[in-house]
Amino acid sequence: MSKAKDEMRAEYRREDLGPLVRGKYAARYAKATNSVVIDPAPSKAHPKEEPPVRQQS
Image (cartoon, rainbow, N blue to C red; front, side, top):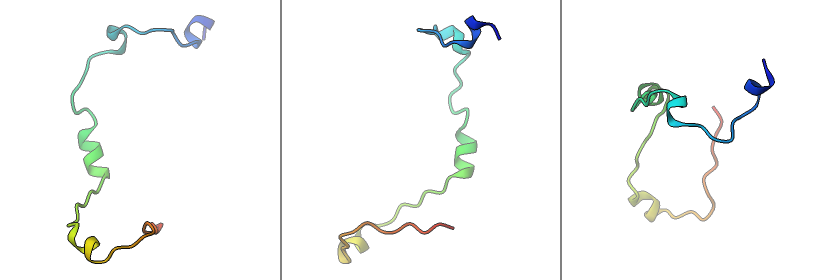
């Protein structure tokens, strides 16, 4: 590579970055991510001072 292409530019123009695509990675993210929303009531009934330990699977 030439030295000019090997270094980062100080600034980039928007058109240098290509077209914007909304939600381009949304399907891949949704497939690889599990989100669970829990009811806060049980945590109020059983308070715990230290944070829970995450178990590695």
